[in-house]
Amino acid sequence: MLEKLCKPSYSPVMANDNRRSRRSELGSVLADLRTAKGLSLRRVEEATGNAVSNAYLSQLENGKIRKPSPNVLHSLAAVYAVPYETLMEKAGYLPSLENGAAGGRKLSAFAIGDMTAAEEEELLKYLAFLRSRISRS
Image (tube, rainbow, N blue to C red):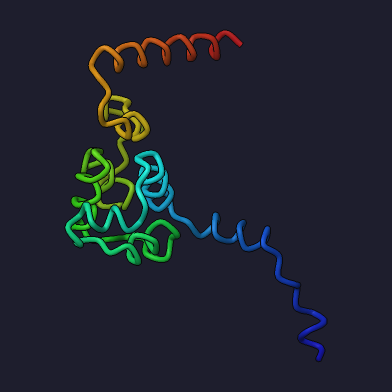
């Protein structure tokens, strides 16, 4: 009886916060990429030729699995059209390149697979413009 009185009640908000805190950086990136591509977990499974099951991908995205095999990351990189090395970095297999030679590109730019060179150039110009406004503030 005492346990019931001392135990905090369940709250969907608390569950959501716990889920976010457990999610790894890799899991968040994978979930964001999948969402940006408009793919369901099952569609990703099909696109990888069943190399990555929808259940396994769900566990990756929710932080229950934090270090998938390089083969899994290779399959996902191909489906999401992002550099394999970037996913390897997020999984901890490669050192972080954020502060250096990676060319400054982020995964969000690669999520748009059909971007033309002209669109990419315009996007980079706009980013430079935004950064110049922020630095003046």
